[in-house]
Image 1 (cartoon, rainbow, N blue to C red):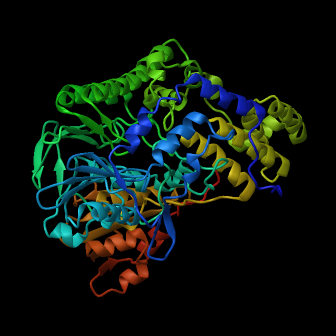
Image 2: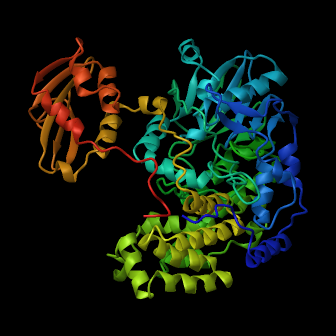
Length: 633
């Protein structure tokens, strides 16, 4: 590891590129700042939000440095966006509708009803949600929460729910509303590939980076993710169709279902009595991700653009303000209509032009280099790639339609990264020669190439101090020049880990509440993902689970695959061991909080057959690694 761990200043070429951004765009346009501050009622006197152990999960003052002039180490456009996102406090959207902004990655919206308040999207963690609700009550009175609504299935829109309501509240009649399919997608996304997503999210949100001019300045969508307790209370009622109207605590709402847009389960909400439109995360003040860098299913820009057209048709004629679960509102019927149609055109253009070019034979990276937005869209601040980007969104569209393979057989069976790296470095004359040439490329300002070629040197020899140092320097310069907040965080986190070691996963969304919400089918699916296949090729273990109040489930590990069958039909093999138990006991075993021996010792559990087969089955499960290497092999 190199001795120097401090960030370096911007190279002249990066400084010049950032200066050019200042000349290119209308930084004297203050409309967004006016909107971001409009309706401000106040913010919290206590600027630090802590968990029960006294650990800091959110710091309202952490981004105070953004009030200063943009330094050479940041893209001025991203600095502008981050400054807007750092405005924190309670804001009045329109009479009866309020937002707490800047208390987490997302916004909490509070709508006043006849008896209390409807809370929409209670942030990522319980601690920040409780602080946001306390701020509202400090200005508007001790109104009870009479309903909760999740707009979609991402954790920053439900994870703080236990900071605003309890299980007793819900059992006592407080409804929790969500779009159809919410629970399935909310829990599966955070469990099936949750470990890998969480580790990559550490890069995407830069939560472990120092905050400042040479470090983390935001993500473009918000500042970063809080690090408190991610919770979940399952919905008590689902919204199932566009045009569905519901009244909760005297609050009239009309819903538009938008599955397959920014989330697999999502909706927009119109408030007829307030002339207000909530766009969830379907229209925010940035170009959004079609494939988030933390990893997820590729989103459908064609469907996304069509739902935005539908929203314009359904709601803009009776809306005076549009707001979302991130950023700041847009007021005025003409302005909000233009905003929504430009957002619509953004996703439609990316979709249609990517398809046009891929049908001419261009690959994903080639399309990404060629794609430019129309001037009218590029002039609109809200289409800039602060969170998603033209580059990775066009590649995502290519992936959605054609997959990872670009059709060139030379790339059909490439060596994996470490083996390829060793061969590249040998071909180029060894590590020292690679670094000699790369230093010249660095001096020339070709940081993209340095990162690409020195990445081979690091993977060929991960302990080579000079290679790690040069790679960190190149990634850092790329971060300083990036307009995209998540790109900056990826680059700077990579540089940080090369210099200082791995940061792990600061925010874990596969929390006990989320895991507890898995259906039994999903739980068995999650178990199957953990089977060490090669170590289980010769295993043949069948267990029948007789869960009280449910049909029997038979699991069989054979050929390295764990299958589960409900019922006792032909697909259910004869069991080696049969276990009678309560659902809570089964969940405890499958989640690892109960061992097979502890389960067998319980009086409430009956075991018929060879109990050792259950122990063998559990012993063939692998454990995920939340700290796997990213910038090193």
